[in-house]
Image (tube, rainbow, N blue to C red):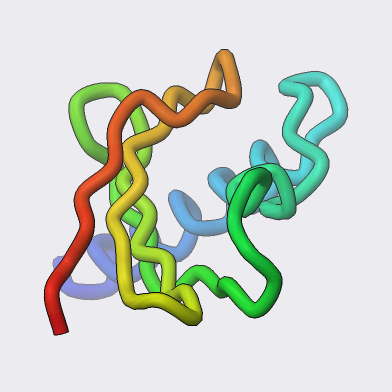
Length: 83
């Protein structure tokens, strides 16, 4: 049973990576996630949230959680985190 769980998790990861890199979906890579962010920003974490993405971005002025609509490639919300 454990083998099936591990195998399914790996298969899900492979499918997600393939779809993220697929030209058919319009996602060429993760660069679009940082559009509009200052130089030196980097993604430290990703999670799905309510049909969108929650992206933890480390910026020179502090960390933020960006709530994104991946279909429209737009930021729909932002949470600023205090240090």
